[in-house]
Image 1 (cartoon, rainbow, N blue to C red):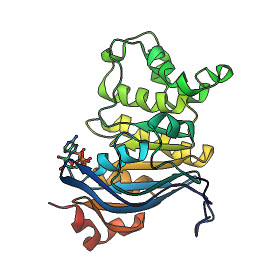
Image 2 (image 1 turned 180 degrees about the vertical axis):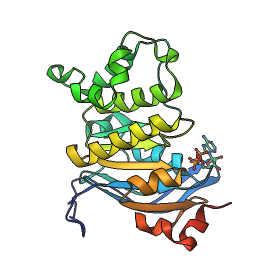
Image 3 (image 1 turned 120 degrees about the vertical axis):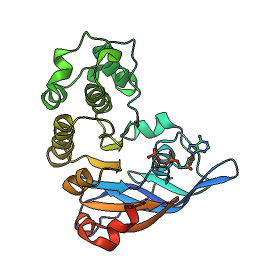
Length: 245
Ligand SMILES: Nc1ncnc2c1ncn2[C@@H]1O[C@H](COP(=O)(O)OP(=O)(O)OP(=O)(O)O)[C@@H](O)[C@H]1O
């Protein structure tokens, strides 16, 4: 069903909105009435401790787990019941936690996995991806499993970008990664927002990374959003208290 995507206070169109979603694993409820909007050319960050439901929310957004209530709207289309490939077809790309690189495939082959939904003419890796992550070009013939964690993270982001997304969803891209590569990833995310106008949804536990990059932050606790506001809110003690155990 076609829906209008209202412009927001910033004037940027809404690329993705989730409205009142619940998600269950059997009888256990993992998400409770989650609503948020992700705008074009903005970075929206969801922060929260281990196990509060961040990955479950992303799995609901990309179609890997059904919701029990609420709506998911992508680019004005209701995709709540659509399968993952149909959502990818509407321009969403997912960089999962743990990266999910194919260890036996080469870097080139891992990137080519992103070709699946592209028309034949677009089946090439844009040079811009190698400009963002030059290491990928140097290692094209190496096996994915031989890369370091940080290199694999760059490969996972590169593979998502091969699909030419307009919404990029990243699940804890800094997890277990050395500081110099975290900086490269932060620069790449900012470039994608500023130069490509991509809507970014970033899930993190790493507060400083989020504060540096985000325009908007949401904090999750026990399956619910307990705070939403501008990134500057993270300087306020009562907001940060949501993140301490
Ligand atoms: N496949 C599953 N089956 C049953 N329960 C699950 C499943 N996946 C997650 N859960 C539970 O749902 C809750 C939310 O987990 P989720 O992975 O979404 O949290 P998270 O905030 O992403 O945590 P982390 O930072 O550790 O990835 C947790 O209590 C978790 O144990």
